[in-house]
Figure 1 (cartoon, helix red, strand yellow):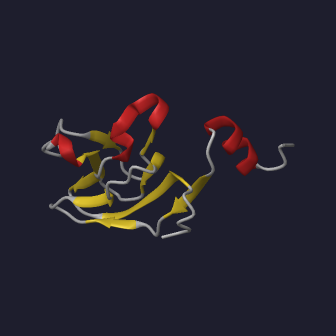
Figure 2: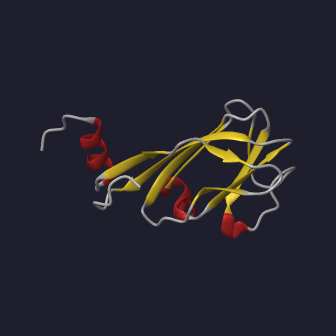
Length: 122
């Protein structure tokens, strides 16, 4: 098969068809945890960008980490970014992920990369 698109390159590299899911910016509530991603075994990667004016902490929900301070993965205000993909970060990419902003809430941009199982967009 001749590669003619980015989708063809992704299928060639990963071995399965993939679907990118751009979410409407989630709003992280302060001071409670907000769910960024529900558990999904078809998720092979994701990007999270912190659009808030506050430091944001994210973590996989099963870790039961106290978010904030030194707990979780720190994303700085106004553009802090985290990425994960299965071949580097393992099974935790598919876990439920939660977030908490320190000082206030706001929008968080997310993109998921999932195995396309004919489900279409959610």
